[in-house]
Structure formats: C-alpha cells, structure tokens
Image 1: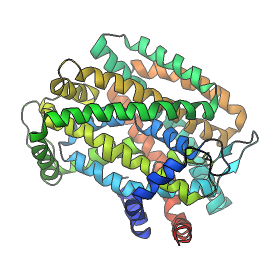
Image 2 (image 1 turned 60 degrees about the vertical axis):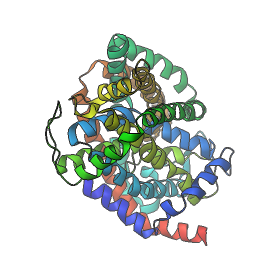
Image 3 (image 1 turned 135 degrees about the horizontal axis):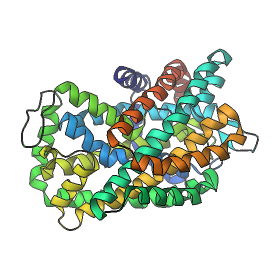
Length: 424
C-alpha cells in the first residue's frame, strides 16, 4: 500500500511537472471565486471543498497524528509531510477525473467519483473495478467516517468530562440525523459554515502554544528530521521506534488524515458547480495542503514542544495532554471540543460518500435504508474498543485505495492532457 500510494502520487507529481505546488496560489484564487457556482452542479466549488474537508479534518488530525508519533516516534511527522506533498497531485487528479466523467442520476443530482471515472473513462470491461470500489467505499465509511469518529469523541468526552460513551454516541447520531435528512445540499451548507470556523479556532490555539514555546521549535523540528532516518531509543514512557515504524505509521496516519488516493474526496467534488475539471482540481488539491501540511503539522509540533510525546500516552489522550501542559486550564478543552466538532463534520462528509457508493450499487432507492444504518452505527462505534476500530479503518482504507490508484495510473494521460490544454 505504501508503495502504491506514494508511487502513484510521485508519478502524477512528475507527470504534472509539480503543478500542484507551483499553482498553489492559483488554487486559493479559484477557491475564492468558487463561493458561487461557475457552471452546472449541485453545490458551489467552495462548498465542495468544505464538504471534502469536513470528511478529512477529523480524528486523523488530532488522534491520528498523536498515534503516529506515539508508535513511530517524531520522524513519523516527516513521512506525513511526504504523503501530503505527493498527495496534492493525487487529490488534484481525482477531482479532475470526477468532474470530467460525472453523470446525473434519476433525481437530477450530479454524481461522480472513482466508480464513475472507472466505468466511463476506462470502459465497460473495467466496470468490475468500479463495483469493487463502491462496495469497499460503502463498508469503509462505517469504519473511517463513522465508528472511528464516534469512538474518539466518546473517549475524549469520557476522559475530560466523564460523559458515558453511549450518551456521546446517541447525541452525535441525533444531530447527524437532523442534517442528513437534507442530503448533500444541507450537508454542504453545514460544512461551509462549520469547517472554516473550527479549523481557524484550532489553528489559532495551536499557534498560541507554539508562540509560548518558540525556543523549543528548532529542537522539535530537529527530532522530526533526525528520527525520520534513524531509530529513536526508548525513554520516559516511550517504548522506542525503528525507522520502518516511523515510515509505516507516518504514511498510514497521513493517508488516514488527508485521504489522498482513497478516492473519497472526488465524490464530493463531482457535485461542484463548475464548467472546468481542471479548475475544480486546483481547488481540490488545497484539501491535502490544509489538512496535513497545516493542521496535522501544528498538532505534531504541539505534541513535540510540550514534551508529552515521550510519556507513553497515545491517540486523543496524548494530544489532550500536550495542549493541557502547554495551555494550563484551557488546552485540554481545545482538544476535546475540537475533536467533537471535527468528528461530527467527518461523520456528515462520509455519509455523502457512502450514499453515493450505495446509489451506484443499488440505485437511489437504497439511500434511505443506508442513512438509517449509518445513524445506528454511530452509538455502536462509540462503545467498541479503539484498537480494533483503528485496525479495521486502516484495512478498509487499503481496500478502497487499490481500485482507485489503478484507475488514476491508467487515466493519468487524460489528466495530463486536460491540465496542459487548460493552462496553455
């Protein structure tokens, strides 16, 4: 999986002449213009990115980064950065193909994603690969986008406020149900309002910690670059980690966080009101930049400058401890409520992905039963054991990524041609 994800990302980056990095400013300009429809679609390009970000900015940014550092050492953060740098090209290519090969369903909604660009781009003989993606995507959503999120929220609220796990699960399910009734348009509206607010609040809190510990940042960065290539010895509560562990957990948690290569984000971008696949692609690639290179980096640096990384804690508890030590009296609540908001919006975003996969497999009549199952899974996930759920989520991510990465590699000439024609 590591070879496939990084390999395809690097291949796309080289084929595009590292355009996602060179055109980052252009992407932000297109995002600003995308606050209104720029063509046919169900939601604005801005809302498409916010829906995508609502699904990616979740427990991966708080619990996932902490888990990577706890198991792989500080060097894991370096490998998270690597996944993001090549992941921008992957996310760009996914969105370009999603808009290029999207369809309208029987209810007039714009639908797209890997299953559609596999069928419409590679031809009917590859339809089985699209079927596999939709099947894996339907099941994977219950792991990465549902039970993992509910579990992390329940864990955080129980640790910080003593709220029973089942209460947290039922509360999330109730609020999610109120939003899901309105479909993708309602979800996009909620995401467009919540995501910028919660991301900005979390970034400001993390920056406050780093400003207060400015003198420790060079040491923290030194740890990241040193232990990306050399083992880190056991010390304090830290059990020690090999370079392979740093690479493995850094890439795994990086992919879990930004979802580049999974094929989930293009499902949201396919609904964008745009007349240009490339323009939407430049908006989509910002998701990886914001998610990993900004938010995950800030979480990782807070954990390192606080010294909490060597205590033996893991997951959301490690992030909470780091913020609490750096911002006494306030830091723990930043993580707790940040996690609640992040996880709630992730549950909404992934419900869109699951719905589209189910619709591809069974038609629009299957959407309502899927929503009921989705809401039931939330309280179930809240009370299960964390280790099992993370393992399940990683496995399901891998199953989703394989068909999508094969399609991206085979359809890369289309992406390169459309990009060249657009910028010329």
